[in-house]
Amino acid sequence: MQNTKKIWCIMSGAVILVVGIFIVPRCLKKLTGEIYKKGHRKINFENLGPEIVKKDTKEQENGN
Image (cartoon, rainbow, N blue to C red; front, side):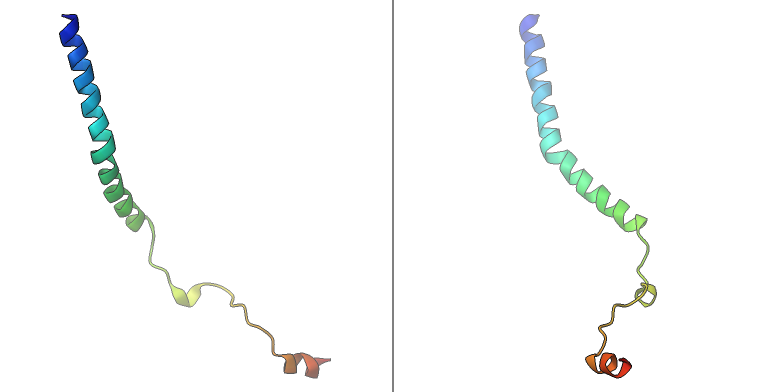
């Protein structure tokens, strides 16, 4: 009885290890990619906010 219990424990541990190493990461990669795509809207590049523009040195000289 003890031998079969140990064998089942070792086999179940090996199965859990294989599932955790090979199957779970693949599923996470697929699912997180889909969730990320659904969670973000398309970017409107026309309405991103203020632009940073360098001042001309000629404008600064004329203004002084």
